Length: 357
Ligand SMILES: Cc1ncc(COP(=O)(O)O)c(C=O)c1O
Image (cartoon, rainbow, N blue to C red; front, side, top):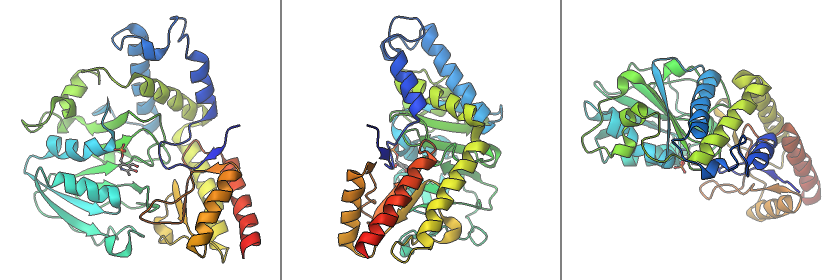
């Protein structure tokens, strides 16, 4: 029996995609072998690579002067790749809105003069700093943001006011809502939440930013090299790229990103409204900054939090334990979580509240 899986990542994938992958596992498209068994230089895989790239461009409306790269190493690798590729003047500003933003900043400090332009750390990252008030240093090469904060359940609703290149880690929100790619010089995302199994990282980068990598940039992290080789400089993560292609097709079949955004807004509203109307559960995030993808909440005591997670699991609602930095529970409701899953969670929350008041 399939459960409703609220894991923050790796995460639930769309059932029709998993079923198609299962059907094609032994014989991909009449080749007599699985996509995982064939050369990445052969026609069938090259076509998959190309199609995944075109579909992502179509779904996100990515302009022609941007490259789409499929790389490895996770979003964490990008914490280094970004400064190694983008620093020309040797300095950049970071906005700290969570644990991953802080890690990106720390990694960045190995490569240049990095500064924290704003941070919500003192309030355990329960809000996004007011972008109207954040200022940046002169002559910086980029501003780094984390668009959706997976652990703390916040998301930007307004972008920094800057002429510098805007970089955003969209690991936990890519393809969940419409974004204007032109607002960004570079977007990156680990695929394992909204796109595919772990192993694939997406980089969307404006082409004029390519070609300035530091001489010490490892070849695998050099965007210009990946771009020139259609992301096939070495053996790519073939299976995650194939799965990404299937997920992109699935999103397209639902009506694209605007359609999935509407569903995501509906799912998030159901859950937040329920929490806000309850005197038992609490979500501590500033309302304006609430994530559409990751919803942290707590019951009145630590004991009840633990009991909630255990009983939810027994009822087929799994991976609801919150991150250790926040505690309590967290429901990750990515694109592939059906609205029925959110309704089942709310029904369970009601029952649990009645039994434990
Ligand atoms: C916003 C964000 N950035 C970065 C990461 C780290 O990603 P990876 O494990 O792909 O390196 C995560 C992982 O959960 C994340 O949520």
